[in-house]
Length: 407
Image 1 (cartoon, rainbow, N blue to C red):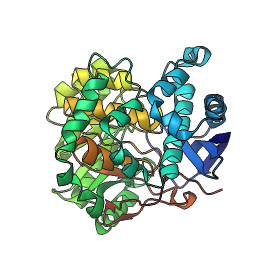
Image 2 (image 1 turned 90 degrees about the vertical axis):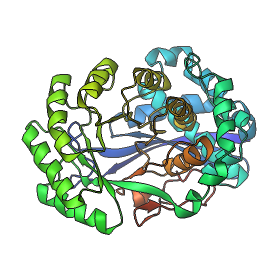
Image 3 (image 1 turned 180 degrees about the vertical axis):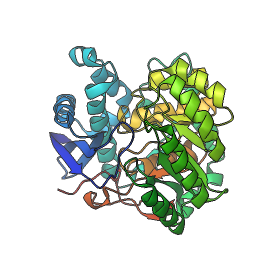
Image 4 (image 1 turned 180 degrees about the horizontal axis):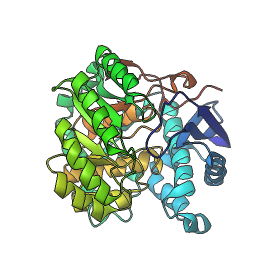
């Protein structure tokens, strides 16, 4: 039984240009942490990601949600968690502050992720194993699919999971081989050209075959020059992505994306405002066959549904510490499966939770194993940091969601 809850405002200045992009020039990587204390001595830890200011507001909102869980057993909570989560999201006064976005959505993410972490710990298994052990009906019971019914009903979600079960054995070897990663730290925005060059060589030596560059400079020539540096060092066979972090207007994006096509990018990420779905459709048409990746700043399943319906997203980057946690991540993943679009998460959690989720997505939903973003800057703050060797995420075996932070 959950006997008490607590929160923690955890902030980690990283400096040295790490984490910088065209919009966020000096980030403070931060987590609003929810802790669910079970009477057996277990503690479920859930994370939501921010860049510093406002992290305390997320903690306060998360405490409001989490108090509803005191006195309940985690098995009871998770047996119908979709309804539990919807009840929280529909709390009338907090819903006015969203709905399903901003501080209240981040707070719901932290609470949801703490529930999943505690559930996996209670069963003594890593999160990926818990998910694979659940029946399709049990998985879907943890999801709030409201507002998706025009594209994904509970019955259809169960059907997708059942269909994937028949070929699951073919995909199980990834648990031994590991999940491929890509290096997103070669080209932070504030790095010099020489740092970018050196980091690309270092990434290749570490076994990465895919890497990402931050773009969105006021002088587009800087972006083009640096993109060519990455392609030159990486070679023709490597996958190179560029990420504008929403910096461009649509006219700017149309211009710069056309110029970036010369480096054969695997994707162009967050080219313009994340709410401009029609703009993304216009851009996707203009730069095809180059694909767009988006989702870092998409706050909920409804907007993801709209992007998929408009067929302008080549890759869905849903983030479990940005949307309403693991449950909404899974709902978006099932929706993406229906539309045939790969899920390549943004990792505000530094890949700690997402290493579990991509394994389930591949084995349990039959989504393609593209790769998972790797950002190493907070490794020392986790009790069980991700293990990336030879450019590959090694499968975690510790019980829980790998989200425990050191005090």
